[in-house]
Length: 488
Image (cartoon, rainbow, N blue to C red):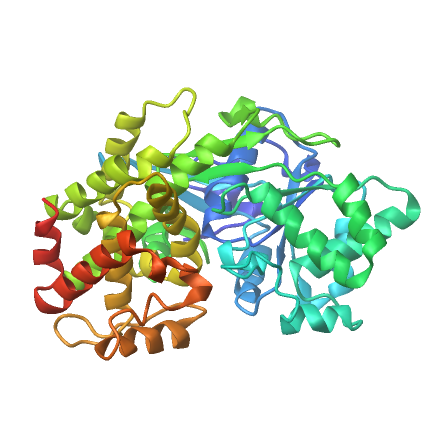
């Protein structure tokens, strides 16, 4: 076995591609908050591709972690000189392993907040990018307002050391402004519509709590390009670590397994420059919104359409569920009848083919994505990915029986026991709230919909309420499989 590091790259199995560039020549250009599997399968992969072409060597990534769980990523990456194994798996069974070298450092904020601020202050850092999850932008789901009462935010406003990404960016931008250095670009890579505008709104709102003049400067001077990112990347499992060790002879504390499909659409708004992403296959476009809506409302919302029905029907792996004709046809009907009418024209995309390709991607047995992963953090996902479809369809005068059934399946799942009476491990920041609302359905069938923080006034929209109640009753009396059959 070979411990992965700079010193051992030449010793690795020849079937594993390794960086062809001199990593000692790579210098920092990006600080990235939220180094997880997706970032390492996506943005870091694209940069590695460019570096293998002899480009973007001044755009190395410094990872930044803020949460307690990020300490493990710090330890894994620092032990391996920032290197890790990425295995892309095609449905045909073909695996493509490679070692990614574009991450050249990692700073864990709680270790030394000043060190992370100092790194972001460096004029060489021209981009700060984010994959902090949908909930990481700290907005109320209904009002859209920044949650100023967040305890971490309040502690920073009171003069405490930064602990949030808002606090770190604010401190670094204030320092740059003080010395006349230009601000870095903030690039969101999270699954949120118009994510650049969302990041801008969040940071400006945070800054306004500390210094209105600074907030105005950020709003005027800092650029926030939007992007659409896509690559199904399950959480790394102990089996993945073992497989990389046994199949390739690599001791890697945290490899990444992903599908072979990848896509990134990005608006070109980088005053201090950017890597030549287009040379690695990124679609640099004038308007990313059509691509965002396509991905969020077709892929992401369909993941939610699969997750709860699949779990209740007994499936635990996504590919098994997606190969069930009942689930596949349910998802295609949702995409065709309810989601597609809310989309804008998407230049260069064959939508019918794209939708069929999604079912094929979900069915990729090599990836071994889990239903539990798709069902996690529903309170962040359903309001952002599915509810906008519901509202637009209702406003268009359209019907939403499939979307209503998806919400009903979440409500049934959130009760915390499956159809065999076994407990469900609900992973959600609002777990207590959603579980309590779901359990209230025995007395009030609309109890779940009365959560205004997720659904606003949907409980007052008959066009949604009636199909929701019908689906929820069917889930309780007939079960997930028979409920799905009703839609075919």
